[in-house]
Length: 271
Ligand SMILES: NC(=O)c1ccc[n+]([C@@H]2O[C@H](COP(=O)([O-])OP(=O)(O)OC[C@H]3O[C@@H](n4cnc5c(N)ncnc54)[C@H](O)[C@@H]3O)[C@@H](O)[C@H]2O)c1
Image (tube, rainbow, N blue to C red; front, side, top):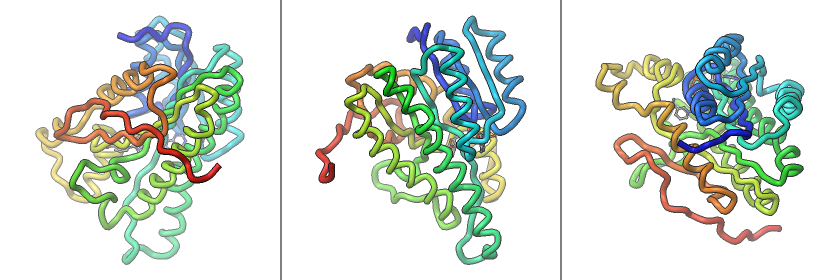
């Protein structure tokens, strides 16, 4: 197990699902962990993690759509733990959207919710952390995207016909991942994204119900588990300062859960 003693990790959307799995694993490896979520049970979750690990755990109710909240929380974490090493920008929401059947009112309200949470939330989380990373001359950001933007070989991108806004919000993350990776490489800060397939969480269960998909024990068992993604995140972190950056890492069902060969950053056409 990788030893993260003395490191600090911040995870957004940490009260459930993938964020919870990431936060728990980071704490188990010895990192001081800061969990935030819009749901108030994040405090109980943090206590639960603190009780089974010997590390420092901090939590707060934070809406990642609000700059003041995520900026203040990040600053508090650095003040309290004296460093920031790892940020998992994970908080996200999903709802089905239909460009034909939805009312215009629903469309606009869904846009605000999905884009503000999934894209602006990642933007604000990164911008909260970057000044600390640059000051400390090291950092690691993992943005949580989706396999809709990086599908297995042979499949088209996209989540189907009723996810236009979710997909747009997740595609936008690519711009942040790529641009931050290039701009921050000289400061020893790496930025990558996980583009994962179905992973057991409240979100995938809700989405499956919404689309009347079968949720048999066999189907649920076939989904990836948050702790498997957490282990892959640790492997990615462990690549160290000369590890990959700027990559969308596809993690798919019926494929090995492992890091793919490095892609490397292609030369930029723009300064
Ligand atoms: N589960 C999957 O199959 C899957 C696949 C691809 C991508 N993802 C992505 O993984 C991430 C985690 O989702 P999950 O599957 O664990 O679902 P989840 O619903 O269990 O977790 C999402 C967490 O984000 C929190 N959150 C929502 N809005 C927030 C806000 N404004 N501020 C702070 N926290 C907020 C929720 O309260 C929740 O705890 C999301 O970005 C999601 O889009 C999930």
